[in-house]
Image 1 (cartoon, rainbow, N blue to C red):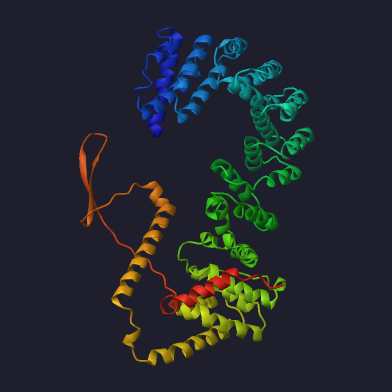
Image 2: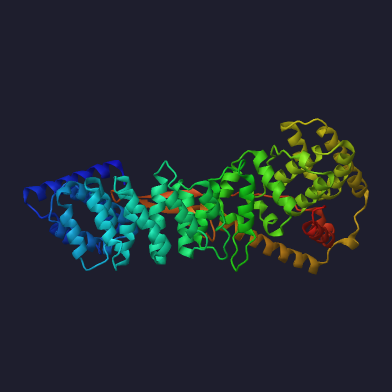
Length: 548
């Protein structure tokens, strides 16, 4: 919707309000004649904008108005509900002198009203005591929606100057003795109160801490929501809620809140807490365990963090050696990442044996993340004294560079971007070791006896085709563009042709030339020459335990 459309709809709303005020039409009778079911979604949105302007400016009979809002809300889309509530709030402001009558109309309705919270929140601005009395009364209602909204509105009444002690006592009582639904409503209200308070409200905090000891699934969700969104939880309550994070078969909406809460932590100062929480989440049992890629907000924050922080988490998880977590570390980096990073290994905390162990974990779990792997391997080299460094150079040359000799360029690139004393000499020694292995092999004559048979070639081609198809499928599932743009399969041709019809009804022919792109990564040479040996080494690296 453009700004000119918005202006036109505002003028329409003002015109309808003027016609109602002059007596030319009765606004709500006019609106009832519109066939909302037959309207297209875009026209419903436009009408709701005009209605917000018109309804907010008219004085009308409360019963007629409330009945119309109830009827229109019954068939409203979720996208339009917010605009309708804003319309109702503006109407209550214009008709503030008859809010007591509005209360009586809502109470007399034989339905569970969605307007309770909006009404009580606005009434509290004009008469907090009367709004509180009504909210406490309706919080005992047999209607679930009315009771839920009345309890939640207590937070707005506190902000408007209502009796805070009475409200706190009511919420604490509901959290201690109420049903599960009432507990969820009370926690929601308490979250909003804490989020808007600059002082620690110990009675509410104590009730929430008690509730966090053994909450139901829905109450747990609401507590995590308060931690992630309200920003008003003190440290003692945060620790209680952090303990609720690990859960099997986590619901997607709760997992999203956990992800949001994790992203609010400081990756550096809260390092130990973040590691404990993520480890407990990723190692939980269940049919559908949480994966690192599910925590997309947290992963995004980690990806944008300084390289030293990323290195700290990588080293922690690789040294811990949990295969479930380590096998997902590729998700931290872009696919086929060849960028070098300024990693910084905490050498004072690691023994020589730990550094060699870490190197083997890099081999096992960062096998196709060449940039991060080379950066971390270089950092491991520089963390060792000279004699141990030479041993590690031989190890890297005999495994990593034997599989990926082209990665010598990445080592050299790292040395140019992040020059370190002794690094060039190490790279030169590794390069000499690679040449010493490769040159005799290059001088050998081809032996046709070692060529694969036609059957072997067909089998390998089929295996490769299946691997490529699976990789392509995973890339499509994770692609942002695939979720935005529709896809189509073209059987032949070099261009896509489509016709575009403008607002005037005329059509134009648009030709979009097709482009091609490709990406490649080096395959490990041992996968071709000694696949069984490579599989054995990778199995051994993954299952190796950290030295004591």
